[in-house]
Image 1: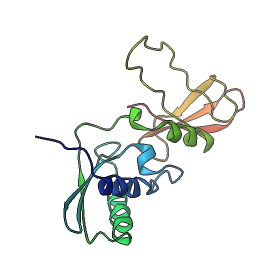
Image 2 (image 1 turned 45 degrees about the vertical axis):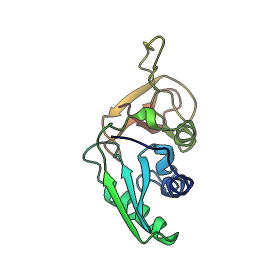
Image 3 (image 1 turned 180 degrees about the vertical axis):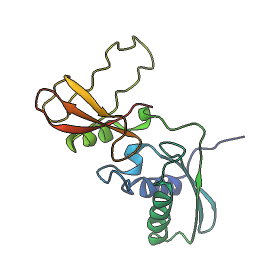
Length: 166
């Protein structure tokens, strides 16, 4: 399969699709979450968008698709096809630095980034987004969504969500 560089129009449409807020974490856009993969103009007024869910059973994928279709329709695209793409699989490494910053600011401990090269961190500590302490405990493996765990800071006693590493 030959891939070509995206056109200026495709880049603009990708930015529009990526600007959609995540339905479960509206503090993040789909671009910051890293789930919008590509936008391809397939003909006059026709666009294909590739979207990778955070996990295979993600219930928000339909809402994401509908919101992407709506924003592209609002900007003059007549026909929008959003395809779910599972390969390559989404990883928490796909969350942008800005997305990680926003998660912490919102009170959700962002996932730890994986080191592509270099030493593997030996700590499993999760930093409290409220006070910064690493003295935290797991309360539940699942929180408001399956991709988050519920933790509590032992230092400040505040509960918080932790976006699990994948």
